[in-house]
Length: 130
Image (tube, rainbow, N blue to C red; front, top):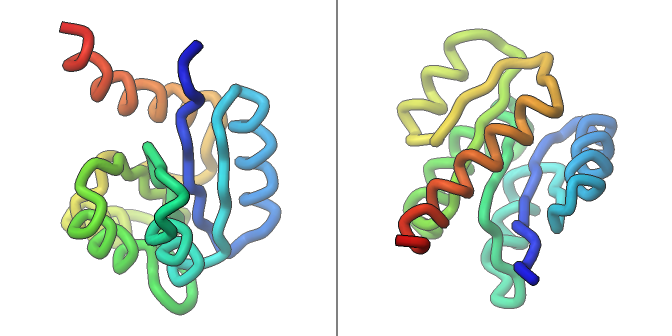
């Protein structure tokens, strides 16, 4: 039996966090959530936790999603990153510049984002199967 993929979902909107948590949990993922970039970094730096994918909102207080992506890409190079924004092209362009793997725009279809996560994570496993 394979281990479930582990997601860290970061958004300052608790309704979105709750919705994403329930959805991905029901799809068999192990999910942790954070309300901002500071909490996310603490979880990522905790030696007991290991994540496969980070899903982060871009516009948040404290550390923005773009700032979080920049830090994560330097410290956790294996981590796949999906950035989400409801604020149009400018944050999306910044997320791309910060090297997010995928940028999606709100409103988000949950099944579309799950397909995106599965695709990103299967790319990792594809190389291992050969």
